[in-house]
Image 1 (tube, protein in one colour):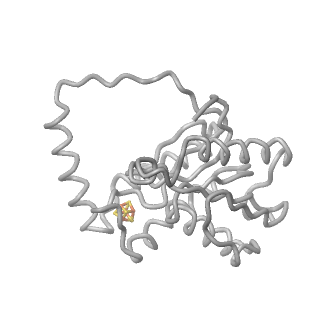
Image 2 (image 1 turned 60 degrees about the vertical axis):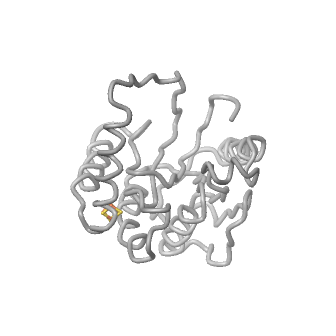
Length: 203
Ligand code: SF4
């Protein structure tokens, strides 16, 4: 990816999600509470066992390595995940996806002015599409495709779909760097167009 101004409230299918550039005060405290609930969550025993095994292996394999940040900063954006615990073969079961969606729903309610959601991967896209539809957004007909976008009206964020930047997709050329740049540029342009947003649910 080029450029550093990624003003996107995005969705990422990663292990646990993380807080960045969140609101201050009570909103931030409530988001922190969601993060704590995620850490304590044991609703999917299969995934928790797998994560524990992967973490233990990583600790052994990377013992002594020093983490070096690359200086990138997230600006007015929030990164989260549709499924917080990494599943074996990157394939969560439908019931696991449904269970974990409640955390994403809580976060979306707590984020005051989400205007654009960039969903990386089909799982993230489906989670966002379902949550927005449940809020009343006219988005049921939207289908997953790289670069597809739906603007369900001023009360809801625009949803943009992207292929997931997994090693499988990038190594095979299914997703290239210019393709990923384009969806971030779309998101940035939409943010510039839409101005200040409204809170999800404030219909
Ligand atoms: S995937 Fe989500 S619902 Fe399942 S155990 Fe992890 S945090 Fe809990």
